Image 1 (spheres, rainbow, N blue to C red):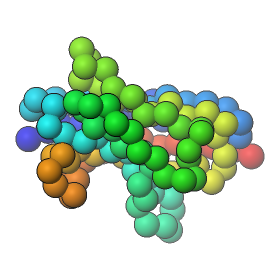
Image 2 (image 1 turned 180 degrees about the vertical axis):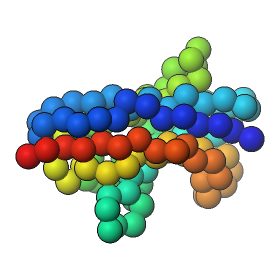
Image 3 (image 1 turned 60 degrees about the vertical axis):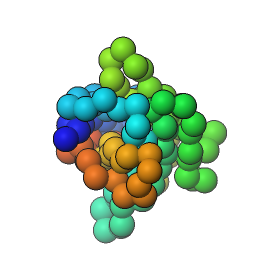
Length: 119
């Protein structure tokens, strides 16, 4: 089992920045990929970014490239999502998730943290 706890959401004006954190526990994460997803009201959940825990390879949705940066801290078993130049359309509940590198499905999810960007 992997437990994930997000934090760092809040209300910010357009053009502002936020950093989300995802604290992971329960298993060695070296064989996992950590992902960030978001879900806006009335919309389906969508992929935002991901990072492989061991190699550090990163992946981004086109809508956030150049504005969001995903990173990880081994010592703290924490994954971050640094968001800059936020737009109202970034408003959503953001979820951290984990999947084994060998699988396509994310099996573990955090509870989510709300990000609201005002215009």
